[in-house]
Image 1 (cartoon, rainbow, N blue to C red):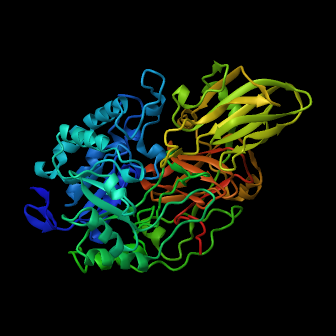
Image 2: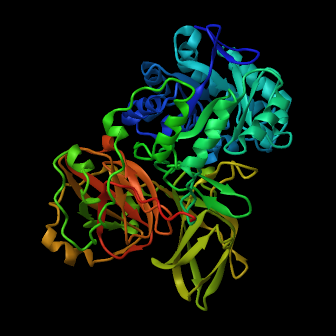
Image 3: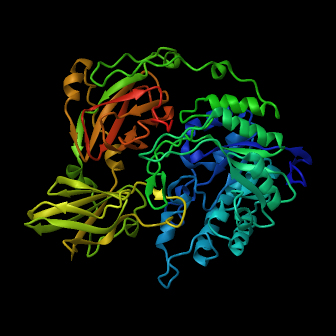
Length: 629
């Protein structure tokens, strides 16, 4: 088959073809759920799946690539083909996507040009382009044989991403395009930019088919796109149907009716579309990005995006509204009864944490039935170990005269512990140049306070101490994914001073908790329900790792609620669900069914501060927090 760009339409074997696509990022969805999400995209009426490729997930160390498990892009594309759908691939190298570093590897920014100058990303710079070339070479065996002219699903490949909002280096774009061609890609190439100012012109080349990114004012945006590109099919390749959330803000939602009306206008104009997002998924682990436009804002673990398919893969009102619109213009499959059913009746309020755990439903039908309690199970987090007690088995200390960044030690995510001895009999003010991104300060093991990047904190008062031990636990809360602060190093940015006097002689270690999580002890018997009231009254004083056991009759998608906990990270059966934070907006973490099993499931929580009790809940519905209205 052939896919081409005609004077007015996309052409599939010479016949006009409209792309009706939806964004679905394989790296934000458990691979055991890929087929389900792709199938539901087809049921909404989509004929194409679009995905970014997250370079930094695949090449965590220079020259070392991973393309298996949850990063098996080839398998993901094969599932798209098996569903009878096409694919649009956006390998970047920069993707934004509210993903850590916009998809660019952190090690890339630690390199220099041989003369001490940092490598220049997203421009015509030799070392950067050499790294990009290596990355594209690694993608070639996956993408090239899966192009439509080779019998695969790929019909379009996007070069760079919204480059017009960043720069206008045509030489860079042309070299990037040539690299894509050199690895054997032959399908049409596209660019995407907002139809504002000169972005469409600055971010593209005559050899790239221009597409737009917008979610409203469709008629106006298409007219601007037509000015930038007088011929060829019109396409909105990022039709924004929702938005992402940041910690401390509200949960973003958009009107299903208004979004559907804009989609109707778009399709009525004859344009092609890629709905961003069809299914957002989750920023599992430490993969979330952040924004910094004067104030640092880390993005939440949930990437629900208020999309047609929610974080747990369930159709929303927007799914049905979009499907109705698409059906006016394109064939739409019949919808299975279970997806066409009306929304369940409102759930009763979750039982309080001190109440006995309700009996688990016997199966999936019981889980989804109306009137099923929102709380499926309580789990008592009984076994706890202080971080200080874990350090002997975790720490890999190194000595430094100045505080190093995490990046300088080859650490790309998570936590770093800085330690030094101090003697301040009258107390002192501790100051740093900058914290990236959040520092908990301890003196002789006792919490002193927190330095928050969001609040531009740089100083904290220390109490008097003689021959004391100062610990600073720094958390990377998410790498900036957009703008000039992409690629910045994490950790403490020195120098560090006490009352203006430079502090040297630091011992530093990364804090990787995965070995502790993976070392599952002999499973204790779950606390009996009658003991729940007494046991739950025991608080947790962090930083500490706590462990519990979830008993299930069968695996199912669930949501972990940590009411009463402060801030930290959670794992189930060794799989990192991501970060939680009491400041919200989200109050639950999505637990994919393939992570769970019938019988006993290991639950581990790293609580950085304190928890008022030890019970957590597994619920069947998400709580993503309050909305603006």
